[in-house]
Amino acid sequence: MKEHGRIPVGKVSRAAKFVTTGAKVGGNYLKHYGRKLKDRNTDRNQLDQDNAEDIYDSLSELKGSALKVAQMLAMDKNLLPTAYQDKFAMSQYSATPLSFPLVVKTFQKYFGDTPGNLFDSFTKNAVNAASIGQVHRAEKEGHVYAVKVQYPGVADSVRSDLKLVKPFALRLFGLNEKELDQYIDEVEGKLLEETDYVLEVERSKRISAACKDISNLFFPTYYEELSSPRVITMDWIDGQHIKEFLSGNPTQDIKNQIGQAMWDFYHHQIHNLKEVHADPHPGNFLMREEGTLGIIDFGCVKEIPEDFYEAYFRLMSKDLVANDEELMPLLYRLNFIYEDDSDHEKELYISIFKEMTMLLGQPFHSDSFDFADNNYFKKIYNLSERLGNMKELRNSKHPRGSRHGLYVNRTYFGLYQLLNMLEADVVTTKPEWLK
Image 1: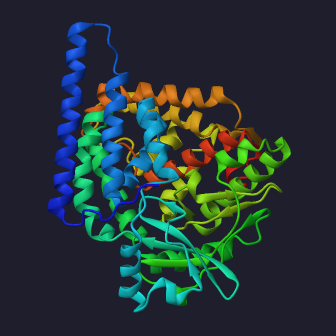
Image 2: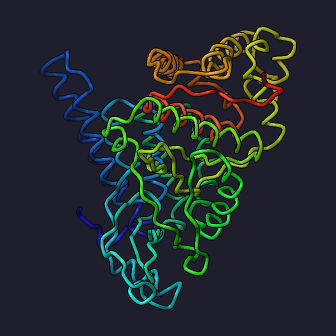
């Protein structure tokens, strides 16, 4: 795997990388228009492939928040043409790793020593490289550790990177600017938290302890004495990411067992802890052939305010959707409709919201749900595509929906996708009051 010797750290050097990428994207559009002149029936596929390649390569080199946005967009498949989905999905598993001398420099800064002296062995090459940091395998006195090292400059570049990402998102994905602003504000806060490895260790220990009694889950132990603001040391745990796991053709019972563990994990966090592991992408889970599920990353955790929680989950009741008298106050509380909306706007947004809620809440409307039902996901993608093409939504004077819903929705959508990949049939447990 090719290594990056250094990451552009300063605002000017990072901005220059975006400018260069923007020029490449502009050149790709010119080539596309040239092809259109020769053949009016030319589609966007080649343009999307060229842009996806150039943008991903730049984000991979920049790492940090820029690459994290690619990872998040890869989860929100309904926003992206296939070429972007396929390329950006690489950020969920691997990115170009950092050269070893920079890893040593990080250890010297925070521990005053090298990883070779702190451990009996420490792999020079990263075994996994993602958006915020990369993982090395280490041993000490017979014990095996996973050591996550944060890329230099990630924390300092979050705000400026997101400003630079915004024009790409607006141009390539046709998003509503007000909703994108709200999305980026929320993402900025979460990304800054993700760069705080002391906070991540604290949350990892607390949430894994709170979930330890859930069947078929396992968690690593974290070692504060070998961790720092930019390094996390935890147990090395064996297991496979979902694609590798599924290639071994596990039985349906095993897939259901892992799917149930995943559902129960999220149910307990959301409904009992009111905070949730809000980064359910495939790279954060390890699966074993006996049907157990390992959780290895608590960098992104969303705390759920009580008033938002009550309003949001009341909407999961299919009876409520038919009761406008009870529904309307919740839609105002969740910022889906506003007092200054016209009657036409209110009618439009209410009808959209009812359709969305009935569809996304469907797993909650029965005692169990078969996530292998691809027709269900086609309905979600078709609805998302239709809404994405609605001028009224793109030109709305308000962002539609509470900012707290961004990560909660993303969490459920990511969970649904993982359960779909597993083709799992699970008991959809829910709070008593929601039944």
